[in-house]
Length: 146
Image (cartoon, helix red, strand yellow):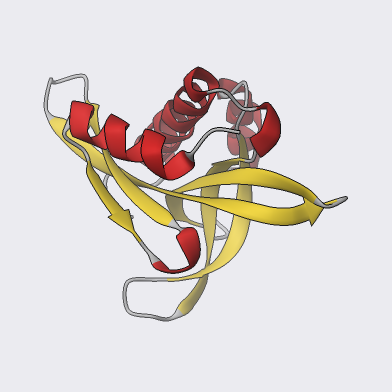
């Protein structure tokens, strides 16, 4: 099985991304995304191994915020755009806003099975989660607000 920490560390060093190791084996990676105007926006992805999640199988869980869900969100369009990802999906999760108040957040997530994942696949899925979250954040949630 691939070593997530080793791959993330190497990837962050090569790309000059900020990587933090959090509690309980979780990581946050700040990926830079080049915009149409050639400026850079940063997008956080959280990564961890979800052990024994379904039928005792370990998954590599990756998630990135797109925006805070409100009744004004265009769910129809978000569902259509969930097809942007091959390995990722869009969902709504309980969260807290910047002030610490409870909210619901639209996230892009992926959870491939750890034992079948190669380094190349892991990096592709990681990038896809970031790319789809970035597109949704810009299109539906006013840009870099999350």
